[in-house]
Image 1 (tube, helix red, strand yellow):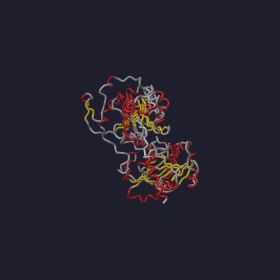
Image 2 (cartoon, rainbow, N blue to C red):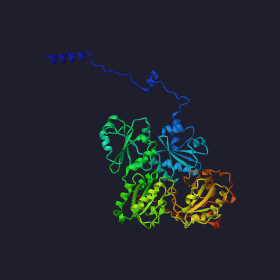
Image 3 (cartoon, one colour):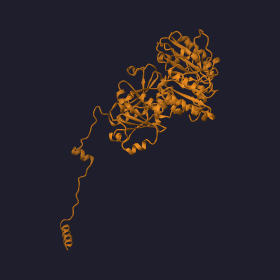
Image 4 (cartoon, rainbow, N blue to C red):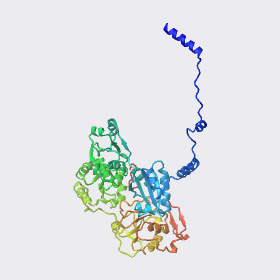
Length: 547
């Protein structure tokens, strides 16, 4: 009855007061501006118009490389955590950086510095040779020492960016993370020196390592990891713990990881080879016949165990590494053989004397001598030439250190082969170049047969002829990438020599028709005609497809 009365009342009320919908004033941009809720904005003198902004964006996107100057460097570094920077003085290096930037687009920012214009930046970054390529990783400088080739620079750059650091926030995340070794866990806090060290961590081919950071003190306690400690879960499921404060540099951290990430005796592959050669860890590669692996593994295990704190022992088979053995100076005729790489990266690899039968005691004594510098390896070499007054000095394997690595001399070195027709065609012009450079007492012009003589590991080439410049004092080889003409070679020497070369007068006979391309120079046609003979490539240091 009460409900009926209530409904009747509501009905009568609606009849007396019919419903009026609520109306809202129409909102529009015009009304808002008239009410001045949002006053119309006018571009200021310093604010570009929309069309100008678009033009600016188009200018930036038109090129993938940043022209770095003293005026914009702080702005550029503020915008890019990682930046690849090339200092150049010649057009070919500038073009190389443009090509690299195009391939690294959306992955890594690339900048270039014209050393002829930006003297302030050249001095600030202590650049002595051109071109020079650096990676600025969180403001930390990493130098590139490889060949000036696009693929090599791309590989080095991407690997040196380093693995991403994952922040782990729960115990379940940590448990899942460490299932895929190798793994590095770090207990750190933000805005600390150890945090910066971890995030600037990089190095050749360390992209196989997963890094996780833990910033929650409660989680640190749960997994028994103290603040500023790192824990490495190695590939063979061993666990190593160390304080980050013991590593003063990124290289120290890399060295510790390399020593412990792999098992004591490790099969060699290209990734491990890159890691070891980029560090100052002495290591060796033992090469055994494929059908004798089981016979020698126990001996190699013993060797790796007794030398575990001084030399890293790796191994591979003859079938995989025969080309590698020949490349570093072995004959490739007798196995097992052994190649050792001393801690000094600029030293040539030492090759086992194949006249000595390989066994545990002799290998242990020889490798111990590699560590303390007393062992001498077999050096593939032509006979040492008798002293002569030739303008171009003939270098062989046994005289390489004495002549090319002489710290008081700048050395231009041609690596050739006696079967290479391009090398033969260039001989006369190279002699004439030597005649000019011999006027400068500190510049040596030399050549070496790359097929018949062993070369240091950092002298990397893929075709004949290849030219390298070894500056006095540093002796880090700089590969020449320009055209094969005397004027360009002389400019290359002048750009990198410690002694002023630019004032030397180039004879008129060397200024014209002196270019030799990758072909045969037809002398009968005045040196202008080039037969298009294909470049004869040299096999890679590793022959096996998997490597």
